[in-house]
Length: 154
Image (tube, rainbow, N blue to C red):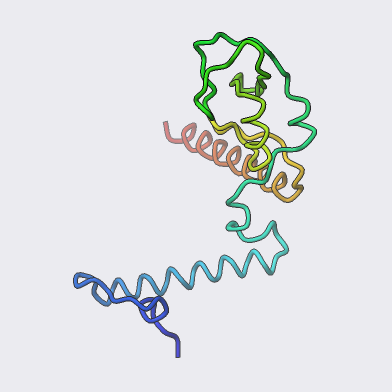
């Protein structure tokens, strides 16, 4: 016999949640289970939970970042919030944001995005790169559908 959400999580429903909430939670769990099964059976990119954490930036990308010295002293590094010194090594991302070398390199070893604008950069993870391409294609298809719809009904 299948247990309900509250039995599985050892908690009690709130007084205002009636049987319709229990049914809704049950159907939501089934739907998520079906989606996960679909991803696993079709040899896709994996369940989205696996892709929710972005991989590190590509090593070649990090090494190729331009390095500067001598930013205005009134400017602060957005990561450590300390002012740039005249002799401190500074890295510049393609999005034009600047960071101390000692701050941005560990950041990019954890995730592939700029800490300021969240622009994503290349990774060495082939699956994640394919996932990004698919997201981009889906976004383009959505834009084309909306454009077609608007052209037909305006």
